[in-house]
Image 1 (tube, rainbow, N blue to C red):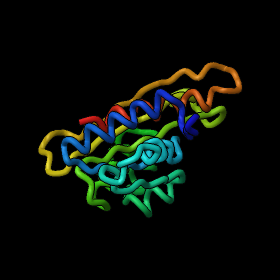
Image 2 (cartoon, one colour; image 1 turned 90 degrees about the vertical axis):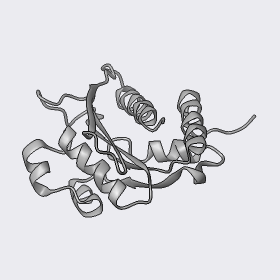
Image 3 (cartoon, rainbow, N blue to C red; image 1 turned 180 degrees about the vertical axis):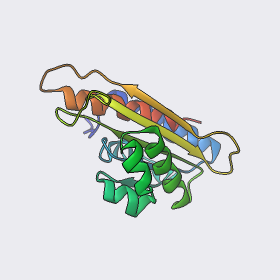
Length: 170
């Protein structure tokens, strides 16, 4: 029996991302906060992922988002790290600092603490930018309910990883 480091549903979706992007000749980059590298980890679980994954940035702190991805202090001060503006800036920074054709970003509140009335635990924002695209940047705020149990954080991060992988499909 083969050892897998990620759950079966994440591995299956990562396999699709790798194969579909190979078919399109696309490279991807990821900028992760609340998922802590799970998206990049899921992709690298797949043989052949080196043809697709250019690089990943784990920017958990606000300082890392600013230093590694060029997120402006004004964005963090005005909108917060868990905002579409911040996620878009993270994705754009990842694209600008890579050789990827598409970059995604994830930032959120995985809990159990850290939530607020405006951004409760389970709030996760996503963004995707495509190189040489004239369209508006894509951003989305989602709420994942992890329940009140001890697995809440893992449930939220699992759902966020799946959503991020979907954004990498051509």
